[in-house]
Image (tube, rainbow, N blue to C red; front, top):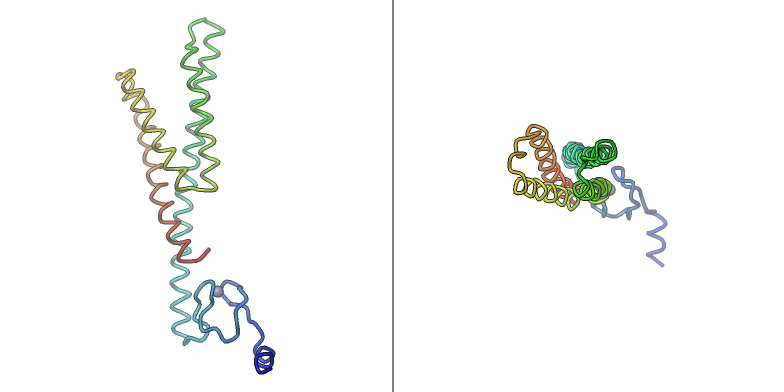
Length: 180
Ligand SMILES: [Zn+2]
């Protein structure tokens, strides 16, 4: 009976930070940890820390976005090479069919990894990076003279993907802390 009375006096409240419904008596929000009954300073410090983490997350997401685009661009570039090869085969009969047959699935794989990145950035960029390195090693073994071709582009791709991996790790950590 007393419980019902106190529930009526203290109806559930909304956390001002994350809008989760909390018990009126809760000292901390059960979702985001906001110190509901804390001093004004404690609440300010909490909001400040949360803001810093949100900014960190935004920066990490930007790098993940760049890595995602890197995967899409790599897929598109390889697809263009494959189409070029196909075109050469028809016009000059000098196109490289086996190469083209390898290039198409590789191009599609990069595009699929790009889409996966939107859902699970960390495993997707890790796979994309390993796959890219493997291809570079393979092409270096098959034709060593091509290592330095497009070297600036290759370094950019590697740089964006490594940044993406670091950012995805950071984003997962911050998301856990923010409980989002
Ligand atoms: Zn909250």
